[in-house]
Amino acid sequence: LQAALQHLEPHQRKELASQLENPWVLITLVRDKHGTFTAQACVPHLQPSGVEVVARHLAGKVLDLGRDGLASHFLQAFIGRWAGEESVGLLCGMVVMRGGGGG
Image 1 (cartoon, rainbow, N blue to C red):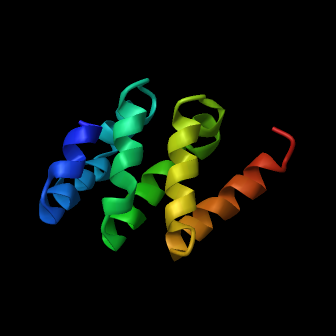
Image 2 (image 1 turned 180 degrees about the horizontal axis):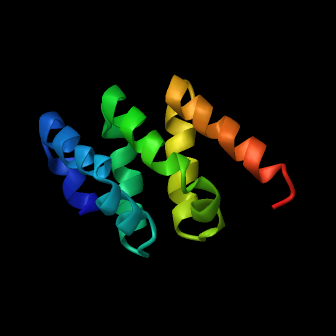
């Protein structure tokens, strides 16, 4: 799927990336050894509204996902690409606050 993503038209990439807005799809993909790569490949193609939706879905699970070897790579890609967005900045703040509390 990652290879196919490169050959899609821009509107098709955006449509595929929008599937990450579904919380079940998002969490299932990022925890899967193949799905996490697909989810990471979709990150640059998210629309700003999709970035906010994904950030909200991740917010309640960020520490758990950060401890998951596969999901943590998605978190790094997502935060790295969208760090300038307000919702992602809030997500980063949650990581610092919760992670810095000693457990």
